Image (cartoon, rainbow over all chains, first blue to last red; front, side, top):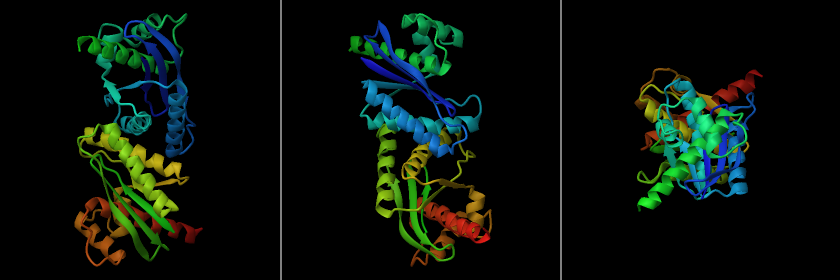
Amino acid sequence: MRVLGIDCGSQRTGYGVIESDGRDHRMIAAGVIRTGAKSPFEQRLLEIAGALRGLIREHAPEAAAVEEVFYAANVKTALKLAHVRGIALLAIAEAGMAVAEYSPLEIKTSVVGYGRAEKSQVKLMVQSLLSLPQPLDSEDACDALAVAICHATRSSSMRRIA
Amino acid sequence: MRVLGIDCGSQRTGYGVIESDGRDHRMIAAGVIRTGAKSPFEQRLLEIAGALRGLIREHAPEAAAVEEVFYAANVKTALKLAHVRGIALLAIAEAGMAVAEYSPLEIKTSVVGYGRAEKSQVKLMVQSLLSLPQPLDSEDACDALAVAICHATRSSSMRRIA
C-alpha cells in the first residue's frame, strides 16, 4: 500500500510517501513544504494546501497518516500548527482518504521499538527501514516518513489479525 | 462594501454577510454551519470548507473578517477550533481576499462601544445596527455579524483617514 505521512508545522511541513507491504518499506518521495515566512498566514495556508493537493495527485497514496496534535511546548505555536493541520486533514479528506492519527509514543514504538526514543534514533531507524544510502537531511521529512511507516506497519498487523 | 464575518467553532461555525458603507449596515445573510457530530473530524472540516466556499460564491463578499484565536477556556477546544479556523482562512484566501482579524475587545468596542460588553448587549446592538425586527436566534451567527460590522466600520474609518 502507498502511504502519505505528513508532519505539520507552522513554518515547515514535512511529507513522505512510502510503498509498503507492512514489512518492507520503500521511499517514493520525501521533502518539506516551505512557505514564505513574510507572507500573510492565510497565503501560507493556501500554499500548503496547494502543495499537499499536488503531492496527492502525483503520488496517489491510498492512505494518509499524521501525528496527533500535542501542545507540550507553547500554546501559541500549537495553535498555529493546528491551523496547518486543519489544512492537511482537509486535503486528505478531499482526496477521499481517511486520516490515521498516531501519538509520538506510538510512532516511536513502531519505528524504533521504544516509545521514548531520541530524534537521532528515529532518524537512523527511518534510514535503515527504507534502506537509504544516507540519513535524511530534514527532520520534518524524516518525521513524516516515520508516521507513514508507523501506519503501514500498524494497518498491516490489523489486517493480519482480522 | 460587502463583508463576510465568520465565527469559527469546533461544533458550529457562524457566518454573517453584510452590505455596509461603514455607517449603515444591512444584513444579507446569516446562519450557522453545523456538521455531523459523529462524522470523523476531517469529514467535518470538508463540510465546513464546502459550505464556506458556497457562501462566498453565492454572496461574493469583497472582504472577510474573523475573530482572533483565543485560548482562555480549554486548550483542547482551542486546538480543535484552530483546525476549523485554518479551513476558514483557506476558503477566504482561495477567494482572493485578505483576512482581517479582530480581538473580542476590538469587536465589542466597535459594535457596543465598550470592550467588556456582555453577550446580550452585543446581541441587542447587532439587532439594532442591522435594523432587524427581532434578535438573532443564534449566538454564532450574531458573533459572525458582529465581526463583519466591526470590519466594515474600521475599514471605512481607515479609508476616511487616508
